Length: 239
Image (tube, rainbow, N blue to C red; front, top):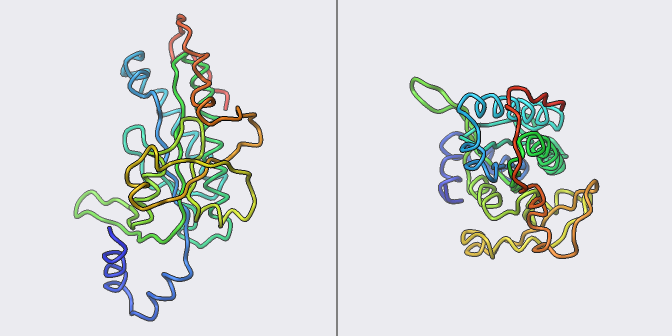
């Protein structure tokens, strides 16, 4: 929803003076992550193998979320999104989401090595206000909404495989926890361009990147060598 609609929703739930305090003080960070190369993976694996691998991978993501004080909101196909700062406010919400994104990129590398399929994670993080609640009459679902949630989704869509793509707002909340480089997200996503969102790519302290972002984009192409792979069932995902 737009910021205006977001405010109307908040005012419909709470008295105006409480809503103003909540809107001013409670900030969360939202992470969206998507598996790049999922279509290729799906075509190379049997349905049973794919379900087995996704179950292992998303189980690992849930473990990473717990370790980094993030709460998983939903899994939509090959998309995973979560929030840090709910249900309790956390001062390190931005750092939690960035660390989770970096850990997710490490986890997918093990799947890439095990399957021989050129897959990666594209992660986007933004910080701001969210509305949360349970929706549905029969099949209840907990979800989050707001302009900032939509923006986090576009941070992922405009991101780079293997990197954590953050907004300038998230960068402020990181307070120097990570080094970054220009993200140029506006060149890859029209929504980010329309809203003039300045973006950055987090530099993983465990990885050495090329000087140029464009030179780095999928250095994973090394893994494109054709080779026979063993069944995913026989792979021991030693996380």
